[in-house]
Image 1 (cartoon, one colour):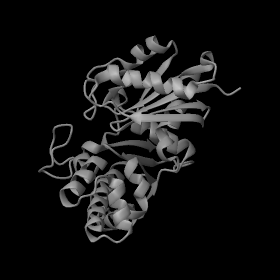
Image 2 (cartoon, helix red, strand yellow; image 1 turned 120 degrees about the vertical axis):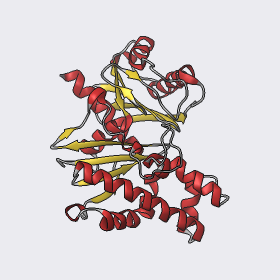
Image 3 (tube, helix red, strand yellow; image 1 turned 120 degrees about the horizontal axis):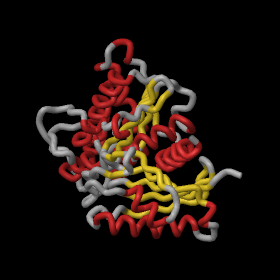
Image 4 (cartoon, one colour; image 1 turned 45 degrees about the vertical axis):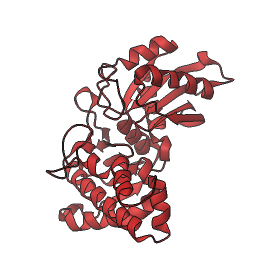
Length: 302
């Protein structure tokens, strides 16, 4: 019998919780992250969403809870070191707190690394030896597979690609530096530019207008594709992947960005890297949930 598990994806915009049987999601629920409420408010969201997805099931049959969280994190110690987009999580021992709260083992992983693993094992990066993943949502995170191995780094903190600097001047990033990839190309940055130039209230609205031919929204999409292409080109030079997979909220409009991203890569990448393809995540918003559950199962088996 395949073990059941709970997976939690904690992001700056949404908390997603799923009940899984192996890699198969049985039930899923989500809520807007209580980003200003501190750990107590978010933990209460965990409780409610876990109860929702677990309703009618035997709680004792759950093998564990896997958390894919924004960071930086110390995944080895089970501690959230701080989340720039969510208040009050500095040095929070999430693994032990949630284990005490639920009575089941808890596994912690960076959300983008978990999503990279999900896409590598079951999605758009299946059977590749070399893959890079980036999530473009409230912020920008990443995960890298090199020589058939997931790159983890010291404390499990590899892949913070959102904090590569693309510019020596603003805008200011959530990390405090100026000109980071995240500050220029994240979903939050895209929506801020849209608010300054249009009356659109969301990225989704910008995309709808761009598809309808609105010139201002098409210009915003073109600028975003250029920033994404510049950051992705740096990732390609760093990791030499066979493929780059893009997930996160902005990946839902990947068709609008695709040509612009590849145009930048063809123009800026060194000759051996110009043909690296960028593709959307095959698992969509479930990449992190499935990847975290799979990594937990792998660790608990070893």
